[in-house]
Length: 324
Image (cartoon, rainbow, N blue to C red; front, side, top):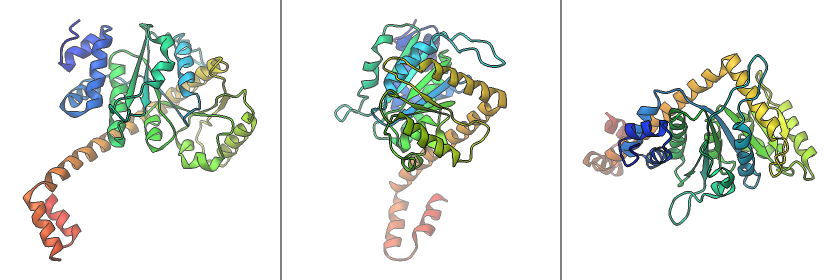
């Protein structure tokens, strides 16, 4: 396998043949952006996406430990669900969205440290992606990375985000099934509504359920759901103790149930189409922002500023003139 190549097409072919080096290089290209990233994206969007499961929740909720347990469970395959047979899962991949290092700008890799049990497993691929402080860039990079993993014949991708915030909500909502992880004493329903959890949650998990307050957390979540306008899927509330693995098998079965529901109702394709539309919007916004920067560096922009300062025009008329 030609893992020394810089050609994305060659690297993708290597990744499909099992080269982790080739796959890692392609992911690095996506993270960096630029011409190479565009070339990779053009290659992978011609392939069907993998099934993606997003996990988000406040820092300290135990998402990394839960993800680690889910890797083991997912490797056993999709459990048998109603009107469907059990399916094998040959490979599992994980995208762990880490906070950026203040020194290097790279991912701190805390999640990968907690997933070391799978580090030598050839059927598991784990990659940390740094937030780098760029909201828009990460929002574009994660869907492209998921597509790449699917193109490299990874059928299941777990996306773990670093916490609950606007960025994490956007990244988690890019998944087919989104799992929101809370803990006993996590806070009132108002905080959950502020975080946008109801809009993205397909499954709620109360992790560390062996601690006091689990019953109150379930009550708060039930009240939130009772007051919400839900469709034909009401997010179930599960309890887990990730440290011991308790409840993880039930969680994976619930993910499988949600997958079957999405496929059976046709919602899966509808969701993916909506995400493609959103991806196109983001690309357009990024390209327009680049054009604005180019215009702002030009002589016409400076001339418009002088006219604006002299009160010979207004910002709206000046902008229209520059864009035309």
